[in-house]
Length: 306
Image (tube, rainbow, N blue to C red; front, side, top):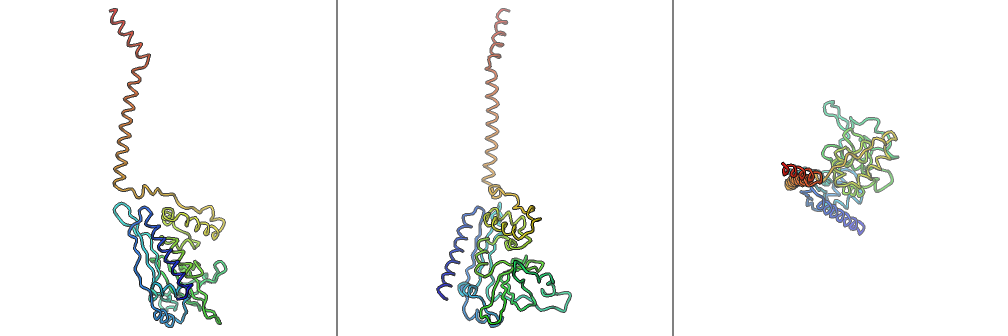
């Protein structure tokens, strides 16, 4: 490993430690689990390159030599249950497989190449979209829990030793969306988004769902503003008026436990008692008014004359 790659690995470890400390301070976050993954060996990396006839970029190769994959998950405690929310994942190098690009003769079990439409030939911000049947090598880095695929796209060029590499996201409708121009850039984006559900859709024209925006409002509001600015520039002018961040959630109400509920009951009881005391004191003050005292003295004087 060169000096630049060791410095990059050191910075990445500091970023992970920073994310862990940030999550530990957040209210409601629990069960933060970082998988203990050993470094990959150089022989495994070289055998993968020979088997797939593809050279890995230096940043990804150094990543696998320092850690053979990555997996960080965290949950949110709501009442007495733990809800899985965050997931940051990179496949081990043995699971980085090439997408099925061979057209199938069966109509019952079509391949991804059979489902790819002609509209995918369009460009995205001046970048050529990946083609499953083209000369580019497309390898899956993360299955995203079934709602898409994060892919390493290796664009082979003649006369160049190291190929051009980009990170793209393929949604469930098999449409491609550009995410980052290197693996290192994608890795940092994944950490900054805290692995929130479906965060990759911030880089698509589909946008984040309302539920995902609520999670962002609670745990990464600044990142949400940055992503919404990017989606605002990507969207058409007619869509600008419909852009919304969703209604704000009261975090104190979401994570209110039984102790907080007892406090609220006690507060309501105290408020009711204070209202009763105020009503009694107001009644006493009314009985002490001058008109009342004059009428009572006149009544006593009439009784005396009788």
